[in-house]
Image (tube, rainbow, N blue to C red; front, side, top):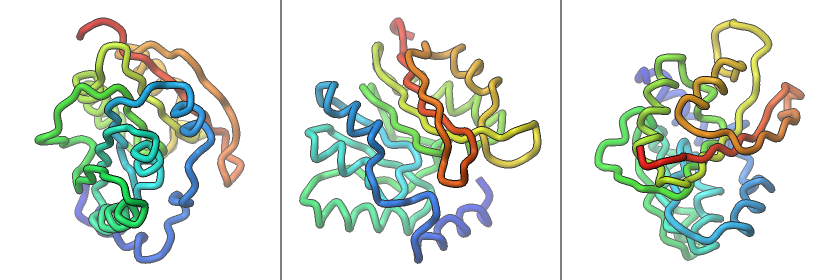
Length: 191
């Protein structure tokens, strides 16, 4: 990740970034209400909204984001909420010192912002961090063609299926009316 991109994302957190709405997605709430608490990893956690909700439901949560300002806000919000979350300033591609296994890995808009080789690296690391039977819950929007920039394509889902089993997909539209989807993947086996 370039220094410029890190700085740009961090500066967004002096205001409210358009992707950080401060609302726990209903999909996360539904997951929490139907699964026993365990260890969760929130990849690209932003200001910690979903990490805090998981912690309030009894999960042991680690939230990572490369924007230092986002992590400072997340720690402040967790303190106000009276919950413990291990928030760390780190890049999802360089999770040094982080060890699994995690029962849940949550990704709301991080994976779709990575380049193709970064997505491959991310999935290899995710595979090593998820517990067998663990869930990768991922949300992303789709881009209409192979143009540069963020967004998912069908090939990204196929790539993820080389590592994990796709159990559920829920399509919809994001706030800009772009096609988007929630995905629930499961790690099978011990690998």
